[in-house]
Length: 361
Ligand SMILES: *Cc1c(COP(=O)(O)O)cnc(C)c1O
Image (cartoon, rainbow, N blue to C red; front, side):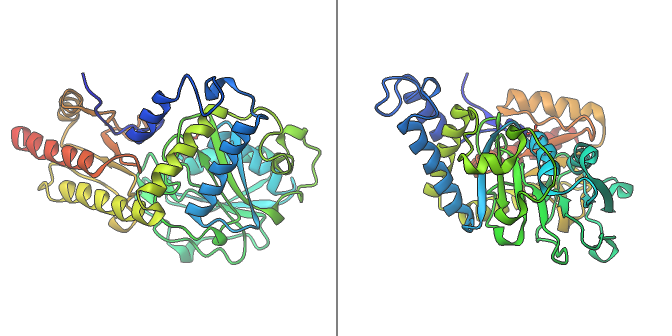
């Protein structure tokens, strides 16, 4: 058996050189004579490792100094709940633009803590496009506008940053973190789980404009107060140290590969290759998303019937193309092609698709 191309939506493929390094230093890390998993988060070695990861993320994303970078336990779901508590008073309104499953979930998660307004939703169209900007019903003076730049299940992505009239944008970038250059200064908050583009699960990252914290007027348990985490360099309690360390290695890999710009170029080519194969299949494969809103990270597609989808998945798995089953909410096939998926992996999928269509068309 050998390592296959893994198209899992998350937890997702990690760069192979990162996994090799983790393996090589798993028992003895740096000069610690112990595993990175076994040392104190307050020791010099781990604090250095943690600070390096933050420095690298700041540099790779161009994060300005007036933003905190928080490394927290949990996932995007934990963070959306915490952000609702930290970014607004209970009587303030947050606007939501819904373009898929995760935006809906964030809304449900935030609803107990503040007032919510659905400013726009693409649900009526089955989440196959973006709601036209001129129809958004924004709340004047809203605490923030929440949206999901890349909807992982529906395969719908914003390829520009929406104008929100001065209201801070809060964006769940779980599935497109560092997938291309982004102007962080246009956002109030960028947040997400690490387990798609950045590292293992268990770690969530929030990039938060400093002035947005401390205005919520609530009495929160200190552990839920993001300002406390910021003051304590995300070590108010024990952080997920192993995941943080692996994330640091992933960032060094991104840098060695050429940084965010190189990731963006490569991801654009990978997506173009795969959508080209779908659109050029004479209707055998079908992606329902409006071309301008198609995701570079998650590509759902369908075959003419479920029987052939089942055969496709089985044969793909045997051919070393893993985890292509679509999310149960949507069905069909989904190829997640995050940063760590090499172009050769997408090419292998495209070749398999052509062969399968020839035999089953
Ligand atoms: C995977 C995913 C989530 C799920 O987050 P958890 O880290 O499991 O809490 C949320 N939002 C988006 C956009 C995702 O892709």
